[in-house]
Image (cartoon, rainbow, N blue to C red; front, side):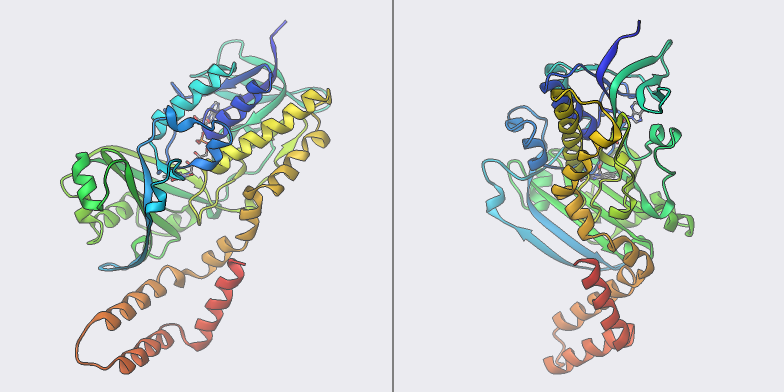
Length: 433
Ligand SMILES: Cc1cc2nc3c(=O)[nH]c(=O)nc-3n(C[C@H](O)[C@H](O)[C@H](O)COP(=O)(O)OP(=O)(O)OC[C@H]3O[C@@H](n4cnc5c(N)ncnc54)[C@H](O)[C@@H]3O)c2cc1C
């Protein structure tokens, strides 16, 4: 007679770890399966960790978790080939006792997170790929098949936290294939530099860190963004664009990353650094409209597998942790009340998601992906127009300021036309409503 668990969690990223930790703490008999050699070995992220989501699970995580730097400064850049127009927000308030955002290295962080899951009592087995779902005669999911010999394992419920590709759900027909216009391909490198060099280049000290997010003509007309994050003794740098845009372009992700690294605003920050790691990964960026069915008979989906990513704010790992936690709370409540893990009973998970920031935020930006797809001028014409405006405004050349103002306005009108400008403002206002 094979062993039956209360719950099986597929994947040991932030979503799976959060779900398994919560389930184990609620007293359930939990099995977590991870295909990687260890949790984190397969995972790629920028990576910014948002403290709030983790604090809900492990309030004192700062005492032990492998954290690189806490963020004190956020830069947002709109790039052209030679310039950037940007904003910086830096505040000493971010040097608080319990900082809000950290840079992390996922391989180390996921390993630590997993140790918390094991300590809570879950059985974690790595190097095991879940190959499918087992259903009973009524179609309810009652377990998983794995690539291990005799690899059938049974459970009352399965949490699918297997990341963006979500092959298990796809194969089982629980969701369709990823659409190329709803997913970004991102590449990332880690460049090593001595700590004091990073401190000097970014004007930081101790554990302080800086985040740079960039968009603009650097992505060659494709929808996407680039980033640069300071770690303790390294800098993470990356770029990602929508897959359907790559398909229509002859520029590779690697070319884009080279362009970003060679940009005059970026090159000095990386000078003399030693490149040690390169990784590529998909990011689900379809937003609210791409979120699939989140629960059914005997299963729930959490994290990237459910497309829970707010690409505008670069929030994915926090949504993964929150959705994993909410999925586990849904299961634990049913278990406590002795109710079966049916689709109807598990549907309260969707309600929990709607009441949380996860679906509230994704819903707020539900039209943004479509607006950006259809209006590439936001990453082509506007960066150029902004750069030209800044150049005109800041250059002291004997031209009076009123003439400069007129010249800037004329340039915008010439670039987009009056109707185009009004239309663009309207589209953006709707996309951000
Ligand atoms: C370049 C890049 C930069 C990013 N930057 C940020 C950032 O700065 N901040 C942020 O919050 N988010 C960021 N994200 C998004 C973030 O990484 C994801 O949202 C987050 O990792 C999702 O967590 P998850 O647990 O759902 O999936 P994952 O982290 O992908 O974990 C899924 C796990 O499931 C395992 N698995 C998959 N299939 C199977 C199977 N069949 N059987 C067993 N195990 C399986 C995988 O090995 C993996 O360990 C970034 C993503 C990328 C690619």
